[in-house]
Image (cartoon, rainbow, N blue to C red; front, side):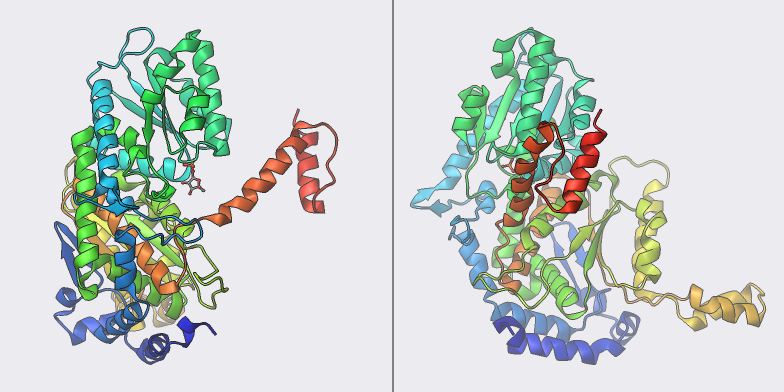
Amino acid sequence: MSLLTESQAWLDLKAHQSASKQHSVRDLFKLDIQRFSKFSLCFEDILVDFSKQPVTQQTVDLLLTLARQQNLETWINRMFLGEKINHTENRAVLHTALRSKKPVILDGEDVTLRVKHELQKMMRFSSAVRNGEYLGYSGRSITDIVNIGIGGSDLGPLMVTKALQPYCSERLKAHFVSNVDGVQLYETLHQLNPATTLFIIASKTFTTQETMANAHSARDWFVAKSGNKDAVSKHFIAVSTNLEAVKTFGVDADNMFKFWDWVGGRYSLWSSIGLSIALMVGMDHFEALLAGADAMDQHFSTAPLEKNIPVILALLAVWHINFNGIRSHAVLPYDQYLHRFPAYLQQLEMESNGKRISRDGQEVDYQTGTVIWGEPGTNGQHAFYQLLHQGTQNISADFLAPCQSQHPIGNHHLLLLANFFAQTEALMRGKNEDEVRNDLESEGLSSEYIEKLLPHKTFPGNRPTTSILYKKLTPRTLGTLIAMYEHKVFVQSVIWNINPFDQWGVELGKQLSNKILPELEQSGPVSTHDVSTNGLINFFKNNQN
Ligand code: F6P
């Protein structure tokens, strides 16, 4: 048994879970008409309603006791103060410094000065491209931007650019290439004119296999199409922490945008990795995004735990994952502009908290992390909601929606929101046998048929959802929402005593693929692996041509 699972706070939650099974949320609403105001929190124009979660005040209090036992407030301070809490990489974790208006001291230096310098460079560059002053090799303005990166160097910029489409320049088109599958690069390049295209090679390390393969192939394409090798430095921009590798690739030092090892890949959209965002939405909107995140940082670092939105969201997740056996969490934006948000959160949460070894190097004896997935509403309703409502496993979900549509058409937004409210209500209430029987009787069905149908038409309800409503998906609101989830993930890691800032788990597959690549390049069968891997490789080789 670990210290965590033996601790009083953990044992109290376990006992509470067994005792509280008899309450349905439906009953809890009947017992307390103040439940909505007691179990919802507001921040700026965002409302987070967790009153449909199967929790009582006692549950929340016990979870808060667990958070205090795990020294959450100390850990929050340690992160904001730049302590090297990413201990397996000996690094500070200061993505918050990228959006901080106050000085942040790391190793005796105010790192926000470096951040400002890079932001100013981004401002100059993005305005020159946006207003058409930055010219390509043939003297024409840029019309297309291709961000080549993967993981955090892709998902953040891609998700934000899609989310802020109404704020994007109409003169520029953004493309994102991440997959090493050449099909994605082909489909992107074949629509482009090299004379008006700007490539951004976004990679913290500048060694990532997929990004470097795409970058080299894009450069080959550019040189072949333009017939102008010298123009590479004008059309290829880099964002990285690795100056040497950038220079070797052929990017002009002036066209390199920096960031630092204290910014984790999946927390990097706020840094110059966000260059494609700034190019598309303009620096004023990029700064509004940063300001929204900074506002959430202030809230997270100062609000009492019981009123702290990321803390409450994380504790609810811990309640479900560790005490209710829930293994899957859906993110369901009723906002088409957030259609890449679930994919973005997948990396944020699963790469951060997919860990089985504690900070002290012990294998944990409790669940960490969870499966994150989702699709925008209402599409998901016609695909997987059946399982949410009536499946055998309980799945928690966040529903997100804007009060104002960016493009009101007829009554579409009312239809969308009617579905949002109906789904969260249905998941909470369910439908009991009496209600189903009444419905079927009113349809005039025979009692024999009604009894047959009854089990199929009942819904257990009590499915845990949090509803997040915001006025409008502005750059500021988006920044606030993303930072809210970043901090939620951190709080979970503190409860679980794991390091959410490394990602060693992605290494093994990378190493093996480097070993397999030469075997694919050579002719003849392969016999160096297990029989399955040998069989698959040899089948591939035999069918390659
Ligand atoms: O998936 C592993 C990872 O290191 C991510 O954490 C990171 O976002 C991604 O690869 C890309 O890394 P880089 O920016 O160094 O190319």
